[in-house]
Length: 330
Ligand code: NAD
Ligand code: LMR
Image 1: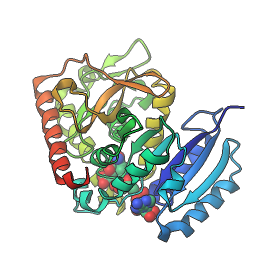
Image 2 (image 1 turned 90 degrees about the horizontal axis):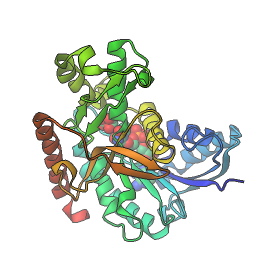
Image 3 (image 1 turned 135 degrees about the vertical axis):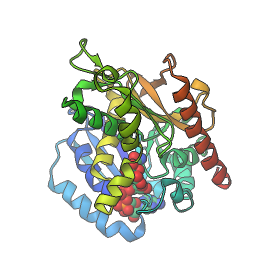
Image 4 (image 1 turned 60 degrees about the vertical axis):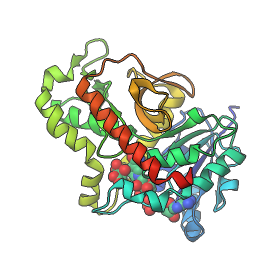
């Protein structure tokens, strides 16, 4: 029998947690033949709610769900975990920027990083969702002595999915036909949605999205919509995005493990290696190629316009400022 993969999820009784756990247990993240054990972490105050979620998971009798463990202790929740999804953190409210959460959420990721490095599986793969996710991932990764730095990632897949959704709607196309849209930089308003390589149409017969829609919409309304979508959802719903965030976290881990299908690459915020002049020492969204199960590399050979490079650098500068703001946590 295939050995179960241990998936730890923090903030498991929160909004995103509630949308995330059931599809993981159903096999949407790691594949239809891969058993999973869920290791769920919550704050002591939310343990009752978490027990309710665990009851519901049990009640679904998911064939692939080989165990559910709940704890308020990171050293228990991360023990031997292969995949760690760091969702537990405060969401912003209307009027706040994601960076305003640094002081409240940053300290969570010091203890989290220490516990991961102490007890998780040697090659554990980490995705940070809790905001500001790039810098929180940097804080957690600063504790990495045993687990490779490369394994610490943050989520910009939601931004990529938002971009695809906008283009598909504009063209009246199926989202699955829109390919190679990605996002550079910070998961903040400074991100740079990149449509320059995007195509729409069946495999092998794709047409350039830029030719079809024109630069005016792509460089204007599209760009602003993608960059500010999180705020628009908070204003409309009174709460931050949850189902779409959970779905995108599943996409991120799914593709890292099982590949990107007909897309050549996918957006992941990963430790910068200096590519495109982006400084090392920050966690930055790049187009990443999946080269095998749990293997990615930053795509290095893309032609990028001077204007895009300038915006990419601004987003990097913002991450350097965030890093400065949490220097005491690193
Ligand atoms: P939520 O308030 O509904 O749930 C958060 C949960 O985390 C709560 O149940 C809380 O008890 C728990 N928690 C807090 N601190 C914890 C800790 N130290 N250890 C374990 N659990 C802890 O919030 P949500 O809507 O689920 O959002 C969670 C985070 O995800 C927020 O920071 C939000 O801004 C972020 N987010 C990121 C993206 C992205 O694209 N990166 C998208 C949406 C939301
Ligand atoms: C999002 O992009 O929806 C999340 O990061 C929540 C937020 O604060 O914008």
